[in-house]
Amino acid sequence: MSSGKKILVVEDSAAQASSYLSILGEKYDITLLRSGTDAIKRIGDISPDLVILDLVLPDFDGLRVLQYLRERVETRFVPVLIVSSRGDVLERIRGLETGAHDYLAKPFDTNELRARVEVQLRIADLERERREAESLRKIISLAATCAHEINNPLTVIGGQSQLLLRRSDLAPEVRRGLELVRDGVDRIQLVIQKMGSLAKAEETHVPGLGTYLDLDRSSKESSDEEKD
Picture 1 (tube, one colour):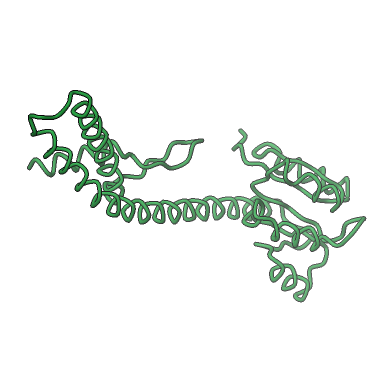
Picture 2 (picture 1 turned 30 degrees about the vertical axis):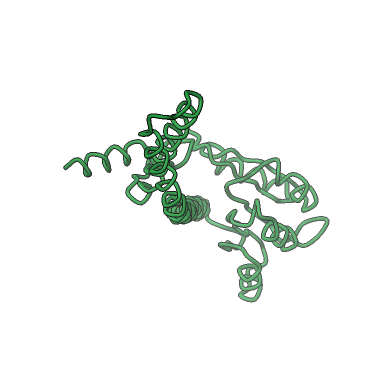
């Protein structure tokens, strides 16, 4: 059964490419490319979750493909597993220093290949969740700051409009305008309340959609706490 994960295999040997398809094709969506040029041209369209890269390609060294992946924002974090006949220590170090996540020498054991692919995909998922959590923390911090900066002048506007509405000599159109101001202030304060509740918001993960913050739930809980 397919996991839905996409793997790009850059391998010039037809026999070796076929073996990847046989070993990994049942569980993953495999795209086979035969040259570095094709990989660079199509990587954006494929959007792989993992790249299996041979270093010996017909047009140029596979490390050039790796460098290209690391220079692009869209592919900077895509895990790359180098599988190459160049198995000496210096080549391994060179590949890892260039940005590969793992290195497997040919010929390889099929079970080891499966295990390394599985591990790299799992690590990539954890790293993605970490980046999402970090982004959420930044949003929370910004929202809390904005809520504080907006609330102070808004309190003044709301208070002054309430005082003016107590006057009995207001023209109808002026009173209506002040009522609109008051209603607008109430609506903005509700939004600020939700923004202030971000720190207490619970993260909810929806498969296929990612992680979001349940503002309505956190706002309700904050209101309940205030009542208590």
